[in-house]
Image (cartoon, rainbow, N blue to C red; front, side):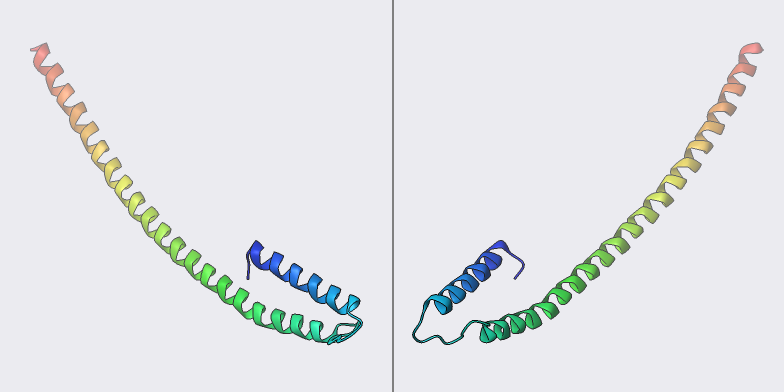
Length: 108
């Protein structure tokens, strides 16, 4: 119902309906105000609305689950980055200590 094929089909159907009922002098099943056509279009709209709402709900559910997964991944990445920063600080301290020890040895 949300495709161009449907839209083009509906426009074609409406034009054919109107042309047949305006031109056809005999056997007009739906004369000018096109009451039957309006009823059909109203029923179509009444059926399409819940379908559109259901698809929007499904899309929002999928977006919500994607957002939860992204949050989980971001939290995990942040934790790993913090652990790496701690390791780098520790390594940096060890390197500085090692350099101090080497410089003391050279002085002797």
